[in-house]
Amino acid sequence: MKVGGWFGLCAVALFLPSLAAADPISGSSSQVGSWRVTAYTRAQTGIFNHCALYRVQNEGFGLALSYTAQGVWTMAAEAPTWNLVPKEAYTATLQVGSTSYTATGRALDARGMTFNVAPEIFDQLKSGQQFSVSANQKRYSISLDGIEAAQQRTRDCIKQYATAARPPSPAPPPGQAGTTTPSPPPGAANTLVTVIQTLLTRLGYDPGPANGVAGLKTNMAISAFQKSIGERGDGLPSEALRGQLERAMVARGPSGSPGSGSPGSAPAASAPPPMQRPPGAPKEKAVAGSGTGFFISPDTVVTNFHVINGCVELRLRKSGGDLGPARVVATSRSDDLAALRASSPSKSFFKLRVGAPIKPAEPVMVFGYPLAEALSSAGNTTLGNVTALTGLRDDSRFIQISAAVQPGNSGGPAVDEAGRLMGVVVSKLNAVAIARLTGDIPQNVNFAIKVATLVSFLEAHNIAYEPANVAAREVPATERAQRAEASSIQVECWK
Image 1 (tube, rainbow, N blue to C red):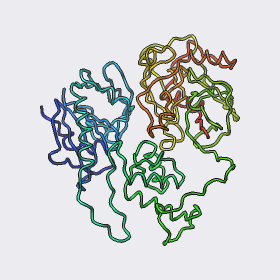
Image 2 (image 1 turned 135 degrees about the vertical axis):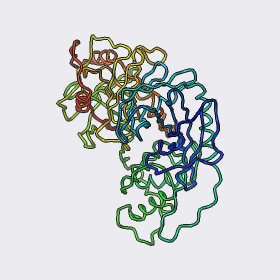
Image 3 (image 1 turned 90 degrees about the vertical axis):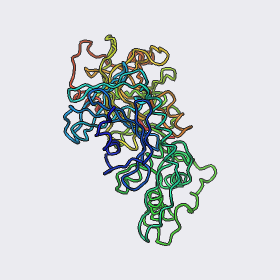
Image 4 (image 1 turned 45 degrees about the horizontal axis):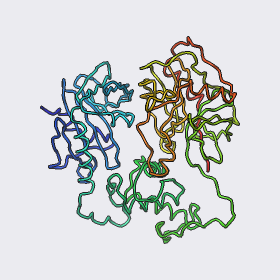
């Protein structure tokens, strides 16, 4: 089988558009069934960057997956007749077996694009299934036979090349930063990462435990720091980053305030530990996590129970602004629901879809505030479909949806084509508790609590809501997104 030239020449540019070029590592390519697995360096630096697997099949349609040392999968595809406009965004429908996903594709050239897809899609890629992409009025399919073995070879490729010994780099000239050190493989403890996590904590960021493993919270804290000093914010640990953090600590000085340091100050790694609270002094509250909520009346907010569980204070935020506290008025641990009373009323709220059964394949829109430290403070909108009318183990309280959800989406609205509330998003059972234990947020959960379950909860607690018109007409997606944003709120948990 002839491999398409676009994949052969542009593999790294495809996955990492921010890089000017990438080079395959000589001798790294291997054939796993119909899939080709190759390791790549960053341009001509010789620094390992990622491994990729790809296959070209019917009518020149090809699929490529990249895997990084941080454990992140990305996806791209090419088709000879897509006729794309480079750098333009396209709405694409990706289908794995009988499950459909809506994704945004970014064109690299006339025939290839990368996709912003829900992370759980990578766990759905199985042998014996067909993978299809519909974009720009063209549909292409490819067989996934043998992909599990190819994905495992790609993971092994990461272990092989991310930990490979390299000759030591020469010391940089005085006054110049050193070169970036590649990140450790997923799950491996690393002294550099431990130091970076400690420095981030002392600077007021939350990278999770200083355990030497760069998980999602560490990547987000790094990205937030990098953006605070005017960088792009790739979220990756490096020697250069450690130097930046140490200089930031020096600038703060021993008192922790900016500008109190001096050129001769000790680096942050040897700074004294923060002063301990005197015995009996009240503990200062801090943000422990956040989720999403939405209004069902001018002053009543619905969210998930696990979003507010254990919080000593709840605060509502909108586009980065503080809208004041909220108090809990009702909860259901078993149904993972909670109702809050907001101190600041909202002019916009959702009407509930009552009396109109949910149907398979219905379009669904999800709004929320995922990955609050890294993504837009104005919230994110994703599109998908109802993929099943029950949840895990046929739990009838839930529906399964393909709209992407991430940490922070918990408690957000799932909206139908008429703008009516059809469900309450659940990012993952016990997601916050699991994240605290592992340092990572569980993925591959696309479930929403049915509106009927919510109605039962509200009526049991005598909480008023407004039913929607059963015969409501379809509303354009842009208008639905505006309504969802206006009726939703970020819920901060303080402990």
